[in-house]
Image (cartoon, rainbow, N blue to C red):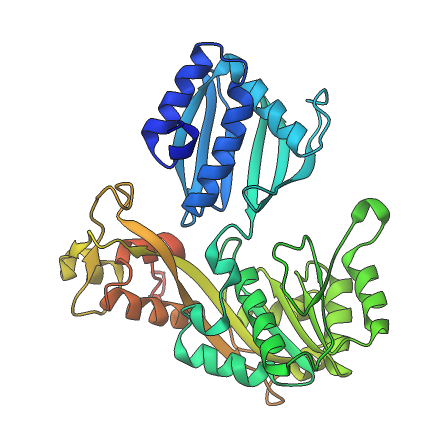
Length: 402
């Protein structure tokens, strides 16, 4: 069998690199195809190709963590970047300016966003596999959200107006949750609701949803698109991300005037999520009356089956976990010696109402409570939770000495 057919193994990549050293003229073409295939098969979300003083370092992001894949000889590294630019429809002769394009591989059934950027040692490229993970097509009840969160989402997704905010840092699975919500609405409405989206960009096609994406080159930005979309009789709108005041104002107005609005943006927890629009100038009464539900989430890596029982005092309680048992990462071929495979959701939720214009900022305590349950049941390790949430801060830190 060919080397390319087995590029999910390190040996396969090493064999392909040897062809580069032998000056194989087909190397760049085969390597580009091989990286796309391997990344898709492994469920990687991104591939980084970074030129260094000695090589083109190739890494991929598995389960949210960058891991080394291979090093391409320095003299053929530009050929690999050039091949990717050809596939993405970019200008191969333009190496001094950033570019962005897309690859659609019909054989692999994968769409890839390609971004290039000039650096000290040449062009770097980052490949984002859109919808490559199976979780991108997961139903709401299959996401692994805590039971209380699923129940609240199902209740509020049946509403005819209001806003549902899904928040978290980059890479926390917000878009996956938003798409799952759309699928839930489509399934429950039986094509009886007008559902539309405006995204930047569209990452996964959702049947039953009229999806659009912004095009800044054509002066079609998020705010402009939303104003036009509201004239098309939508009942449910997904806004890919609220990034500015203009978009937030239109979103809140739509939620107040008869549309159910789903949107994502970057916020640390539920309190931050509601207070952020207020801080950028949205009136508190509008936020209070428009927002129905906030879900804040993170993704933690699941322990592989090679995990082992940990020392509760040293591995858990010393890190702030009040648990009776815990497990820590092992190492095996299945998990590529990382100790982890796939990911699980840590989440908190908060409803809003007329009682208060703001949700008090409670820090990440409820996220920690959700994560602690995963630690005690062996889904993840204390060390992984700390990697994602940071060290736990005491609820009432001691006062500094005078």
